[in-house]
Image 1 (cartoon, rainbow, N blue to C red):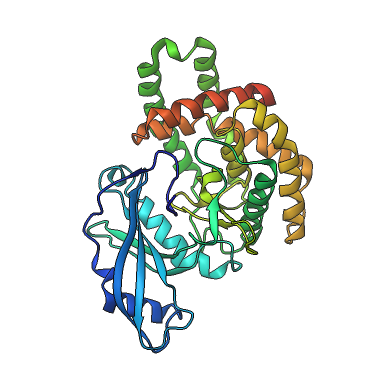
Image 2 (image 1 turned 90 degrees about the vertical axis):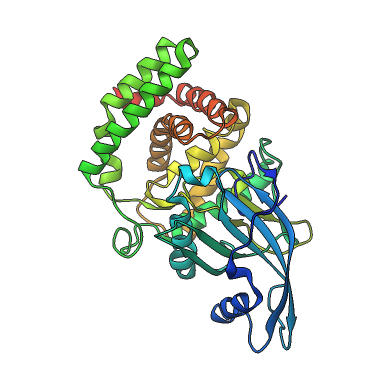
Length: 366
């Protein structure tokens, strides 16, 4: 399977016209600027594979050089906007380009794929990223929608904890890195979500029970109070925002390397457990979640401590996790609002509602 876009729902498509950035002369300049090419030059660029994901188009490029090119990449991943779905989330490319060009260089090495260049054009909204190709050394743990094994899950959760620890309560949050939403902005967000939810509930009709409608009603009534955890601006970090397990690349057998995280079009400042709840409560059915949830939360917490996080208790993590599970009842509605296919949002809705029941998350609405 190709890389660096959502694995779920991927399908192979005809390659669109490639942007000028992948012309040999421009790639040479990009690789030299990134410190990946010294005196040689790109001589030939070929398309090795091409496919659409839900929001982007992924092209694997093969490179041939003239002159000295020791250490230069033999292939690259070109990521661009999906011709259709990308129009529904016009800011996705802006966010991901910002992540790889501004945040990634300030993070620990070998946590995300290396970026060799990227740009977002504010006028045309066209964007691209040139990313390290890890196809030969790494792989996704399992084919969507199968969950990973327990061992794979532990590797994934440790990588996520390393990402969170790297930005935990960083003084740059909301200043040089990311943006805080104000109280007024989160209140306005309620208006937007309420409109989406009303249409969503109307579409579902009796497929959304009276009990579930009551849950959403009480949740909306408590929206501002639930946002107080975010507005406290403590024990927060940069979250991935789409942290399902198919956005993690694991080293192949006999390869000594680290897990890499990719697909950062939804990153933002938030409570870290939003990613954990998204990964487990939204994506896994109860049997898998109930077996893996506690040991993964334990491993996540131990990794935070190992990488320097202090003043955050295991009990606080558990409480934040349960609150984040409740927050994720909104995710299927947001997904529906941008035309994500029902095969994704409907199953997410059923799983997260079961997790809310299982974990007693309605406590936060009392």
